[in-house]
Image (cartoon, rainbow, N blue to C red; front, side):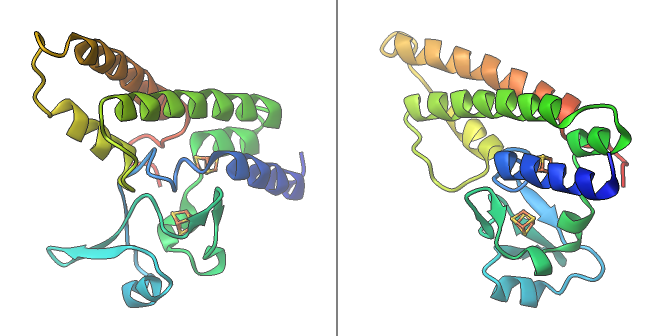
Length: 178
Ligand code: SF4
Ligand code: SF4
């Protein structure tokens, strides 16, 4: 596959995925050298500062229908990030069709997790998935009065475990990767 074909395939895959921008994979994106936080904030991105370190909250407000609306001016980390699926595609270790299947399977798992979180009583609130999950799981439940809820939470715990493994194995980069 030529470099141009590979870029076009990557673009189609990202348009079907969006998981590195929509709060599924990350809760924050750290600002890097070359980023100008004030400028990124003026684009509508959720730029925050804690202990002198700037970061961008996820889900990203620049994402619309799985597309980056600030693509030309996106932060450095976004420019440098290539998930494992895109890396394997570039190296010829996977095909576009295989990567697409992986994305569809993983997104199905994400939707199951989201559905179970809602069944536990937490509506979509614009927070990252891991944060919403933690909020649900840390809410006390009376097992005698709410046995159905216990069953839903057990299912949620299992699906979330499966999702984390899949994201680590197939999408996130190993610690220390550039
Ligand atoms: S996780 Fe990978 S395929 Fe999905 S949007 Fe991000 S870079 Fe694209
Ligand atoms: S700025 Fe664009 S590429 Fe970066 S997280 Fe937001 S939508 Fe994704």
